[in-house]
Image 1 (cartoon, helix red, strand yellow):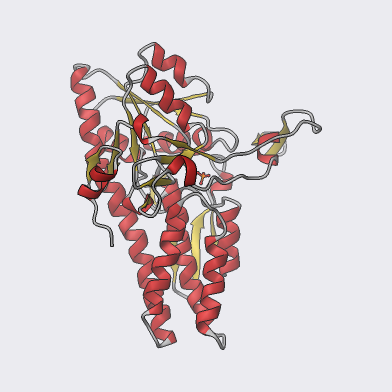
Image 2 (spheres, rainbow, N blue to C red; image 1 turned 180 degrees about the vertical axis):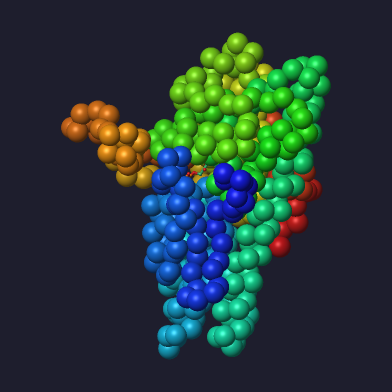
Length: 369
Ligand code: MRU
């Protein structure tokens, strides 16, 4: 997508000179736009764990490139297979909920495992990383085209009036390699000349909505309003939301959706008010090995400092700073994701089309390899 007129993806490989992975450092947005180089598997692991990059698709693509570095590092060691596996485990262990991470690491292990020659293995790992990233871009583009149909229908029902969407967290291009999942239909609607407006949940504790989604929408000129996390239900009761659209970090084969904490409450409010609740995801986010998402999707718990503190831009020191929000002796808990049961989901928008959140419907659109 364009940033100040220049085209960017969230992660890419630098092959001239020392091989490295280049990312947009999302910790500094929306105040500073900076790209940084990751020179080793360990640096990639830290960037994923500490959320320099975040969002299921972006994490997956970054891990894919991390496995390219892993192949290079392991190629210099006596036991290549062992070196590769330990680095794969390190990357896989960084964040547990988004399945795209394990998808990318496992796909790389399969691809590299088929090659005996180490030099060829390194080349294959780069090709595989590029393929994962390119597929992510293509999937998000296709999601945009499919999701556009839903927005077009809503626009027609409103005689061309503004379609109000509500989104949670950041399922924009920063959460993928490009385009985004939940934002792709919005950008497609904008290109098609449909009037849209987006309610952006701030998304505590890390405020990905206020910081990242709002920044993206502003960059692309999409009308939007940032709201506190608790506002959506009120807006839905008063007819101010035509559609909720979110991304997903993992979708079980029966259509249960793990997404940023608070998504479930939006789905409940949407159901109570007859507002359609759509989830946009590339098929790499579907976990075909897991059925009951509420019971079995692992929910990441992060450090309590993310709840205690809030980051913001300090105009006086001209840098990102933190403020403390409540007494130090109070306990804090930080569940990063929740699971919305399939019954609350109106439809899943994938690169293959739109389907019900149900196993047969998902299987009819996707081939499991
Ligand atoms: O903790 P994060 O920022 O990596 O959370 C992931 C998300 O951005 C959201 O849950 C998003 O809606 C999923 S879409 C990739």
